[in-house]
Image (cartoon, rainbow over all chains, first blue to last red; front, side, top):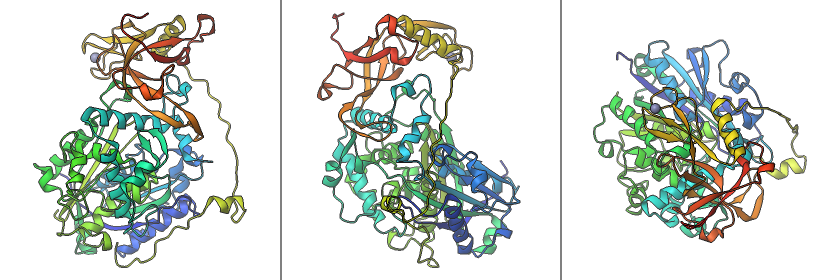
Length: 390
Length: 173
Ligand SMILES: [Zn+2]
């Protein structure tokens, strides 16, 4: 395929908070403006806008993309929202990538926004509508059910304990203590804190879950000739992949996310990666629940099946380990405004690979990172690989 | 982060800011009523539930028996060949003990959602339902369970015609 090289040249984000005073439009604008200022560009330089935001049911607003468009700088430009559930935050920069890689546009603004707090009293109830209306909703399902059942199946299949998995929440919330936008950073948190927190849906305790949040993140993507004019440190998009599993989620093995593997293989092939465990230096897998980080590392082929918790026990996935995982603090620590949380992971790779991550900077001048998100009825995998070489 | 930015936008509010009227807000409720067609395959599934049995679908090409039934096989994209009557017994594939309702109210006695692999369907093919008549401490993956049905005259052709699944020992009726 003859495709152009695409780089990330700017990034911006708001704080992630439980409830923001700002509207979704205002959050989107803050993140967008910051991304543009970070690379000294203006909206006039932007040829198209890609927007990601999760279900309209959170906001009670129909056609959220059009509602958010002024904050995202979309007026008078080619504009489209992409939406693949929780996978959106990593899919939207993929959409931006093919806008530029195709030759259609030279500079694109990618904006992901989420305001989950408007749904009253708790955004959780809005998730009822993801279940099948006839065969599942009459049972009054709770979103926690499917995660708790997937976690239980994962633990049972590989003989993993809740304590092994709680270590992930501890790592990520400690990492988030160094993130200026984080909602739940805590340098002192312990495994006991997680295990002793309220049981919501066994095996899931309150501190195994990321919090619903409000926030926005934006990136500027540019074609090679533009990127080299803007910055001497472009961060290149080396590979992308996405994949979907069956919507009949009770008709498949829940212990292993094969759709994540398929998405990862697509991205590795594009990036020319043969040995991902040696060639990926930083990983930002989707971690709305602590077990999901493990589950996804395995689907990404970065850990053997059932062995991801051992990597953490061995210190490999700590910020100063051989393969840091969620050095940002992840969704568990920074917060989980769904689409924005996924794009936060891509922004983290951008800052890490430029050596600009401040207190969160992983040592050893990393050259390549992978971000992944996941969503819908536990069936969507989206993967992006960023690196310092084109 | 980029060294240009020391301050990040976003103003946190608390629940108290709403309760104490420190900020302006507009509260409204949407009422949304729907009547969903069951469609062809799920219509047959619901009709079978009303009769007191579970219905699956069979694809001869893929040799798969799935539940609930569907009109198209998503693997080979051919029409499903036939409906098949399945047992109302199965095996717990996974479960949770849930202390929170769908609308985030806390409850003392947990709900027991489970994925139940249905006897007669292909391996790993199950449905989501709830468990009952069991001590939450005793629930385990691999537990054999049987459907507990509403009385025939109370069934309406809905997944709730099965009240829950309860454990049984092989050989017991
Ligand atoms: Zn087939």
